[in-house]
Length: 276
Image (cartoon, rainbow, N blue to C red; front, side):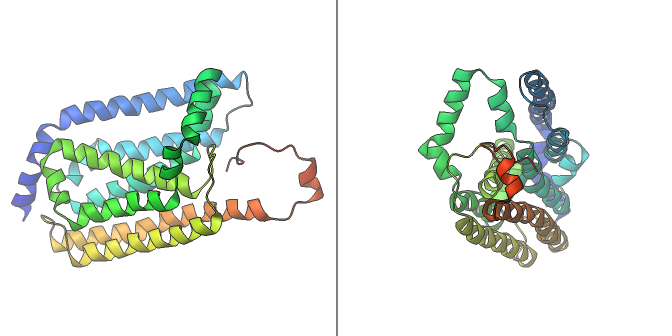
């Protein structure tokens, strides 16, 4: 089984340098671009919160560790490490990056005309559909079912291009799911909270059932022992991250419906949600 799995990853490893260079360029751009935008906009607006810097860098570290370095290399041969990478690039990384409010910072940084174009995109029907919790959940959880319940997992270990496409999808779908459930950046189309809660619970259920499915039916090329351990990582690790996401969702829901006090009426309001 080990020899078979090694052969699956041969092409990936042979081309890993190209992928690593591309991933490192993106990571360096994210590390440098965020503080530059924050620094240049601090002169015009209020100071960008320190907690958002920390959230951004921790999120970038999570995503980067799943793409390059020792853990990413080990993930080609060890399903447990692959699943840890899945949690980092598809759940924890997107959550931390979303909490850093990158769209809000971008709108502060760009020229007025560019900001208007970006706002128009956010208000478009396509953006509205993609931010629908049900659509985001299907792309996120449905994509994972396609990955682990079909031969796609073996194929991505064989073909580098497919490997990259799967990682990009997992990250974007995870980020889309996160911003559909909580409100950090400007969101012209805010879904009903009850609707979000129902979809959220369905998504959590689908993720948990998939972990149990992997435990019982390992993906092709994965040994039973590795599948069992990887499924446990997915099940319990996913629950911890989802619990954090659920807490933020409930907290924002509570703030949106709580009775207003006299002190609140004296506090200036803002168009966007308060930073967490």
